[in-house]
Amino acid sequence: MRTSEYPESPLHISDERLKADPSRVVLRPFHLGWQARTADGNRAFKLVQDINSLSEDQAAVEYRRVQSDFAERHWQTERMFLERYAEVEEVLGLDGAQYSETRRKLIGSYFCHEYTYAAAALMNPSVVPHPDQSGMAGGACRFVMSLRAVGEGHISSIAFREGIFERGGDFSLWPQSSFATAADSAIAEVAGDEAVTVYRHSDSSLSNTVIFPVTEQQAGGLEDLRLVRFEHGDGDYEWIGTYTAYSGRSIRSELMRTRDFKSFVMQPIRGEAGRNKGMALFPQKIDGRYAMVGRQDGKNLFLLKSDDLECWDDEGALLMTPKYPWEFIQIGNCGSPLLTEHGWLLFTHGVGAMRKYSLGCALLDKDDPSKVLARAKTPVLTAVDNDRSGYVPNVVYTCGAMIVGEELLIPYGISDSAVGFATTTVDELLRIME
Image (cartoon, rainbow, N blue to C red; front, side, top):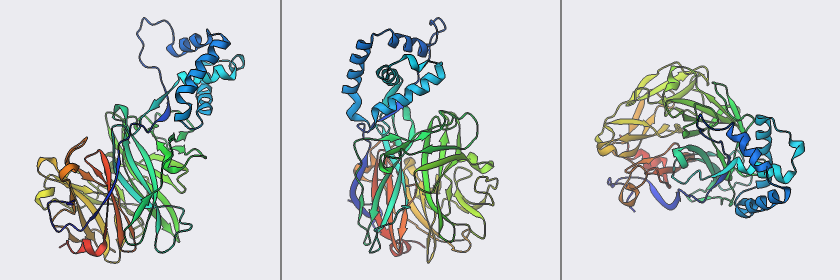
């Protein structure tokens, strides 16, 4: 397969593909929607009354039907029904003592539904070293990959896959089980700008975990997580991601922070710079300050610095402008810069004629990343052949690559419909820069 119409592309493309999969479902709370002004009473309370009108035998028969339909499609289904019942009981002020366990589970099932979180699209991955590197030898590195999964209603969520990147460029993905689970928050919804923590089920693997929107600002989706392993110093690592929180009307940048991929703190970025999307954090401080790359004006790349990870008032200094035809419309980052002995390697994306997206790269000075030492004159990857077709055609895009030694693993989105994988080396990229 050609990697682009530019013959000097240094990427080696894998045959591995991840695609949208409507069979991947999770149990989600079902909220009764709009009701007419003439409707008789609260719909949720009326639904509970209808369920309570069943005899105990009828309730048992109906619950067996639910079990037959859904028990094998989800993990710990009955426990989740009981948890959902408890939420309904609290909201409606029900007296749970008067209900049998079967009836409580039946009520809970009526307030749940299956959601196909990756039915529409799977795209825009980023990849970082895994917190657990036990058992790795010979230069291999265990990794965590984040994915933007798009389901019903075009709602974006964050999914994960784990795998191993071997010396020489080989990689493998850990298998997923048939069950996917949604990360839980301690509260159902946050209206303001508070941070919220979500938790992975203790018995579920990361590869089977999905993080859904929690706050009002996130209601339209969690888009394009750019993960980075951030070193605070002396080997103290925290995994931090920047992503776009879309409310359905407005956007802002937010942070996702974790040290173990078991609990995740999600919080807004304060300051004027946070109103934009596509911010990517450097993996360490630069001259004692946090640094990011962002597209603050919608067209050009800027270097931003801050003394506070959570507040970015600085609009930054201009770093790169579109220079070549394949990026004349706009350029942006494709994830956090990667530190090499030659400088900071920054993957970029450019948008050219017919809104075609291509991947590029640049080299920034190690000590002063405001200095661009070199950049690729031609794309390292463009959409060609069958990869041009998809949910959004003619797009290749990544939210972050991983470097191990001199070798790079680059997962990338294909026309917002699938995820592909490429490998290369630092030297191969440097050869196409000028």
